[in-house]
Length: 236
Image: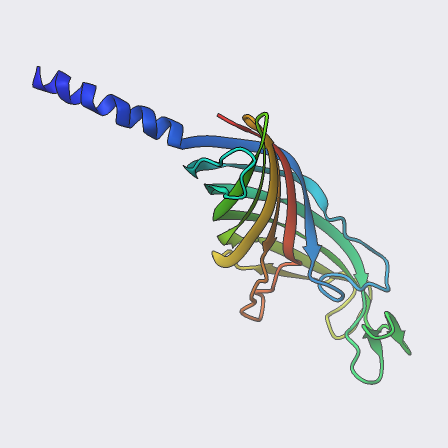
């Protein structure tokens, strides 16, 4: 009887926990922010560097405080989740860096005198994160709400590249290949965003600031420094 009494006493707590934590999942589109000229491509030379791809998220939502309808006092939600910020696959023709006499110049977006040894860069990677954000939100009535969120993130951005020499030069004979990659190490970032929701459905926009580091040598930085994510979500 005592065990049954304990279980009955725990039922309200369990019910409250189920309503306090909910699962949110969404799919949509991601768009990366490139690190810039001479990061796996030369802007003034032929290159293909698309940044838009599929994106998704899944996580937990905790409603810390309910928002009162049409009140300036916001409710508060807590989001903890995984986000997939898309995958990039690039190809480019690049010259040697400008050395004062010749090579590709970021100032002119072209080669000075000559491009030096021409190489084909084939590179790509993806961005993944775990984040914890706080979202103040306002109830507009009829089930509609708007919110803004921000918080810390931990991300990884695996990136690999192959440099193929189109002609002989300081990087080797024609056809020689150099492989480099970005070491996969969890790194700190920041996530910000906005949301519009109606009942269990929501549209969330987020941006992750993901400026990465490079240890040098064959451990190179990734080609992106952040990404946008726009998803249509359902909260269970």
